[in-house]
Amino acid sequence: MKTTATSRPRFLPLLALTFALALAVPGLTHAAETPEARSTMHGKMMEGCAGMMEQKQQMLTEMTAHDDALVAQVATMNGAPANRKSELMAAIVTTLVEQRAAHRAQNAKMEKKMMAHRWITWRRVRTRWRLAQ
Image (cartoon, rainbow, N blue to C red):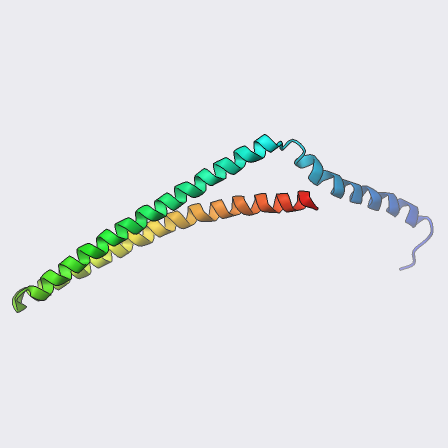
């Protein structure tokens, strides 16, 4: 394809306009963000993090309680006569299955919240990185 001298002058202003817009848009989109707004966003984000950590701690406490209950059931099974052991073992297996199902449901719920939180955090970090350049 042959380039003519008349096609170049039309292309260069378009290129210059594109670069000018690319440089101006990030500054315009975040110009309204004040330090107060940033600290408010940071405070809300930290509240969300604290809430998640509290939920995680509550989940760990519940898991410890479940483990303790299972240890007590196993001790009861081990001390039981032979004719009751299979009945107690079935109860332990049922409890384990119920706990596992509940744990998976709770993990799925928390994973969804964590992924949303990570996405928001990533976008904020990316925005700050762009502003710093």
